[in-house]
Length: 124
Figure 1 (cartoon, rainbow, N blue to C red):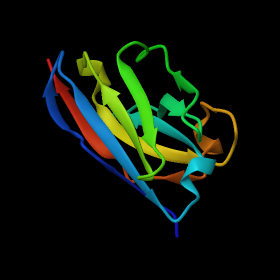
Figure 2: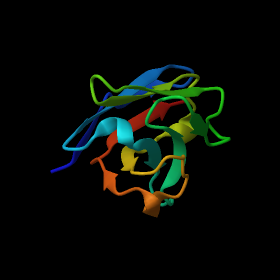
Figure 3: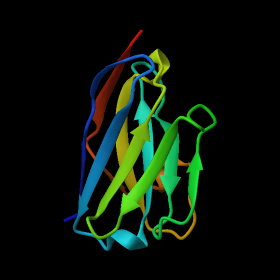
């Protein structure tokens, strides 16, 4: 069965950096667009960014553009979210998700598989 397991969350001070990882199993990893979403308490889940199966194209939400970078290692079936210049408003549970399409989508329901999430807390 497909599993997505996030790791790397934690507590960090504002202005700091953190790298999240998402290890995938049970799927042909390089066939999937991998997305990152986040959900803060009392808010809807929101798109953070995504990367195509080859890693050739990335797309980011305006709120994280220039601060976050998504990459993937298809040999390790892992996608990463490097977060820098973190702000208190980045505090949320971060989820990775997999979508069997060629192009990036920002819409959560279109992603078929989801991880359990990892908490990121940014203290101000």
